[in-house]
Amino acid sequence: MIPAAPAVAPQPERRGPAGRGGFGLVLRAEWTKFRTVRGWVLGVIAAPLVTVGLGYLISSGITCSQGPHPCSAPVGPGGESVTDSFYFVHQALRDNGSITVRVTSLTGTAGLRPWSKAGVLIKAGIRPGAAYAAMLVTGGHGVRMQYDFTGDTAGAPGAVSRASPR
Image (cartoon, rainbow, N blue to C red; front, side, top):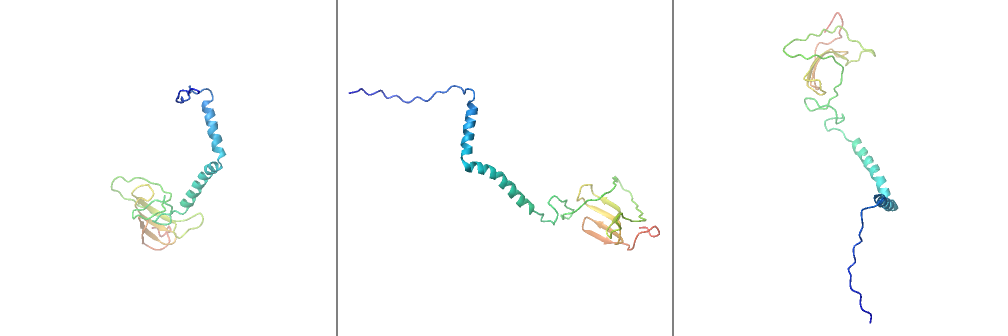
């Protein structure tokens, strides 16, 4: 009879500090494992393409509920979307005062349009969408008082000229 060997529990493998190339070897092994599974590679390529494509499709159909303008359009005092762009010279009026404007001609480089305007505009601020009131002479609709993007009141009709200033 052969005597039985004493039962010895297996010892865990002892490893010292990683030698040169330890991290590099692990990285290479993981890369090899990753690229051998075809679905993983295709998934990594397809995920950004699907994300960008869905983002483009979803964002191209968004409009504001306030109107046809893009969502970044300024909003007027009454909550409506506005297109508020123009060129003007401005000066702050600190206290009470008066402003007088005399328009003797209205011309345009491409011909005078019916809604071409010249006059005085008073705004609550210079940001787009700020409340305003304006007295204007138009190219074909006479004198108008316009305010807050929705108000428009007709004044004296007729064209402006040196003999008939407004």
